[in-house]
Image: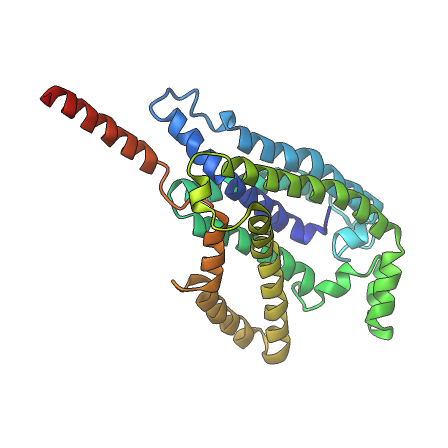
Length: 304
């Protein structure tokens, strides 16, 4: 649905966010399948992974291909001027790459959640959305937002001759924007409903209320700000730094600041993440505790 250069980053970020949203259910799923045969432990048997792949294949791929056919210049960030400039293999790579990226993002985040490092699963989501917004805001040449708000190659070529406001208004009245509006309502709407629904489902499981420190509505708002707002702000700040001091100094400086904000033990981001109630223990933790409880019960019975 978005420009091809950013599409894989978005698909990866969506897959990672889906897994994080269903983190508690994934841990329960792993506990249920513990000790079962290989058939029940198959990756394909995971309903959350299957729904993630279905979302990418049914919603993201068709809408992206439609926009690529309708406006190949905008869809390629004006690298191609028309259909003749788009290599057929590139279309094949896009159609196959979106589901693969979504599944990869899901599996990486799932592995982190099951290992009990949910905060790193969250950072995995942040990284995906940071790359997405960084591509759209800055791009590879500092003109990412210009490419996004130019509906045609001519508009992009004439960008410096008119004001940003006029270009944005022209884009808002274009057929490309109308298609984005319609497809965005479907794709982003289903995406948000899925993420919120899986969060709500996880909070209904035993022990979830103890981990969640704020009401559900506020927890959803905090989660949205952390997954979408923070990467957008980071990409914007990184772009500003690169424009001010250059890439060789701006990017390392941004990396240091981001590391302090995200990785410090008393980071406000880490504190806000803790309010949402995503599981932070290894998936075997409750299983081992239950096993120890059963063993102690057996020992007590025998001693009696």
